[in-house]
Length: 85
Image 1: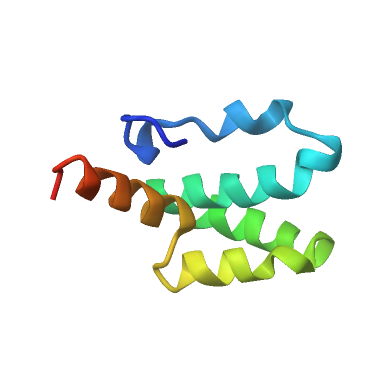
Image 2: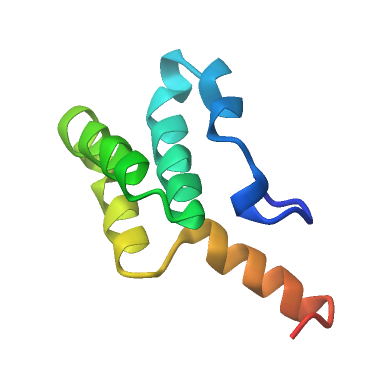
């Protein structure tokens, strides 16, 4: 997620191995990836899961919808500190 590849190139299915206590964050990360890919249906599916099953993470979905993706922000900061912009 924090590597050099574009978020669009990361397959959300990679997160399928995360279950149990990791499931809530896996759904939020899938939402991030679907949003990065422009996959509105995939994003909405994950957003609905978060809002109904894990409402404590609804803030994360709200941030993605507002264009303030956590992963996008961290990746942009890393690029700036490495001289990328």
